Length: 225
Image (cartoon, rainbow, N blue to C red; front, side, top):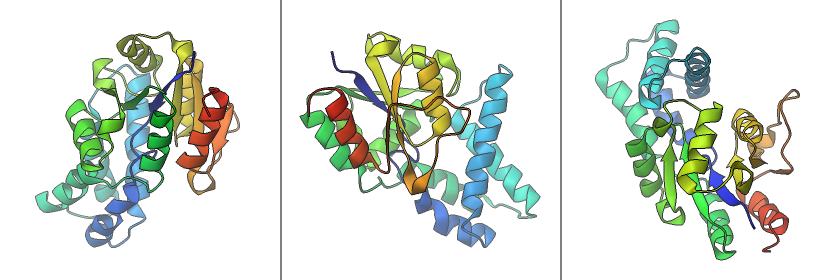
């Protein structure tokens, strides 16, 4: 039986680079967006490892305040709204809809699994015009843990009513791919911008430079091409 294909959302399907103009205006440097996202992930990982849960929106805000403090920038409410509100209005990567359509037309079940809060995830995918591709949009909020904690992947398997081995994650984050593999899923890594899987991480059987190439590889691997 073909795997159920589960997609990460931020950076995998949606383009965070759309926030760069807001970071350029607020910080004078669009590259601060990457520092903010890295701070957000580090905070999420530390909280998860130490058994504390906050929703990703709160973590995003705290990370933004931390980055601003380090750079001596006083954020106004409008500044925060421009950046954090923009997360709900991210555009899709150009390869997202074609890849999802190809997989759907191949008869595969599709779902989304994100660290974002449920209402944020639904708003994001609806704004991007991608929500109609998924039978379920799943948030880590249901597990009260953040990816890549194993409880998240178990929750997704339960919600989709399949065994872990019947699932394949597609993500542009090697830590997410590794979490899925350790939970018994298959996975595919979207190596955007030439990204590499970490040397000590498990390597998935499918790797491609973009979503369309990964989608074609999935169809071949699932025997539905």
